[in-house]
Length: 71
Image (cartoon, rainbow, N blue to C red):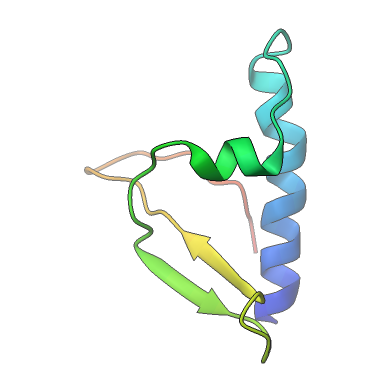
């Protein structure tokens, strides 16, 4: 179940993020990892490999917040 939700979330981000700014230049994964970012609120493992995890950032404040996943 966790793996399926993570896959849906990643798929949604792949569609939504480029559409937000179609003029943005693509960046490599290494460039993305080198950018400053806040620490995740939660790290969720979905397998036994050290590389099988997802990071979750929760919105701050009262909301309302945009939801990417509807269950």
